[in-house]
Length: 326
Length: 175
Image (cartoon, rainbow over the protein chains, first blue to last red):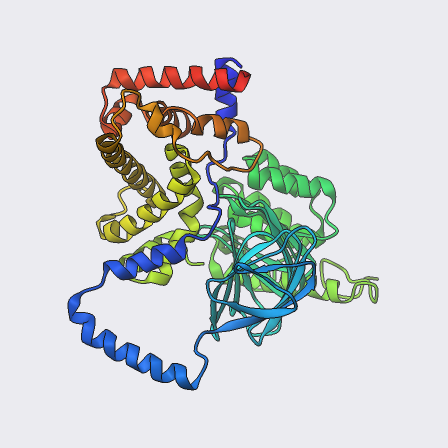
């Protein structure tokens, strides 16, 4: 191997590697310990006493039911023989031949596919939260939006009342496919709205890609990936515009917000030609990324998309208007 | 999830949930750095935890003059290198040796998945000094002057260690 080959190999090393286990519980314990002061003692004693009293009457530790579906999933360090309880901080592991069903509190359930590692992070009525370190889940939730969260190495899937399949490797390369309702997938700096019948790819560091519909043509999907993950820039964006159809409006709505400002007008014009904006949404406001204009446009795109998806096989819907195609 | 600036501000105000979100956003990047600098998966886990505990204490001093991720990265490098220096001093006191490579050789090897596993393993097996300079220069993009300051060596030593590291890596990967 020469100097140049070594350089190339080094440049391909991943910038991020997920720790093999969740280190947060250890960090959290040390943060608490670090803030301990003697003058808290009377208060702490009172708290312990109160907790003991409560513990005698009710089970305080929240936990979700887990049922084995196949093989021998591992719950914490024990084999799951039939069913068990997943407590906050517990890991659930499935190998190549095992699957499990987890009740998401009282709002839903998820099937844990083979080869998955997940942890229950929070189990409160207002925060049902899992960390999916790797593998795949099929989630079905029937609740108001933003109660169920799945954290992955590439970002967090936020349930907006839906059913979806989410898969990821330990670095964050993955895929989200929504089959009912809508999911938001967000990192600190980027988010994607994924309605039913749409898919996003995820990558480490970058996070969620631009969503596309299930039947999007392969060249369009490739152009979106080039834009999102391969630094395709203006060229990839122009490819997306050339390949997009009216039913791909949801992709262009996201693209509008991610392209270089100099390209926004071009993206907007293509989007408006494929699916005209609703009254009140002007070109200037949309290009300025005015939040009300974008929300107004999204509402129309989403309504037409939803109608098209739910009436698939029943009625042919015009993807420009949402009305019955003539 | 809120934007990173918002998370940092909330964590600075003592919000531990925001701090946990910061951990989840940056753990992979910090762990990768710790893993490569220490050459040991076990040590990398410990150092990653140290970094975030230190971050919690130091967060109030972050003024936003640089990107938060760059600031955290620099903090992580300092935590790992300080610990390496302390450990080396402690181990040399109880196990005198003329060969510093012996200390590095006692670590458990890196268990890392992926296409670059051979290179990762070869980096982990480098002598401590050579590995630190290689990781900081070739992977993390620091300059020799900066590395000399961080590691506490002369600039010329940093260059020599880099040369040695690259040579050892090529030999290991060709073997």
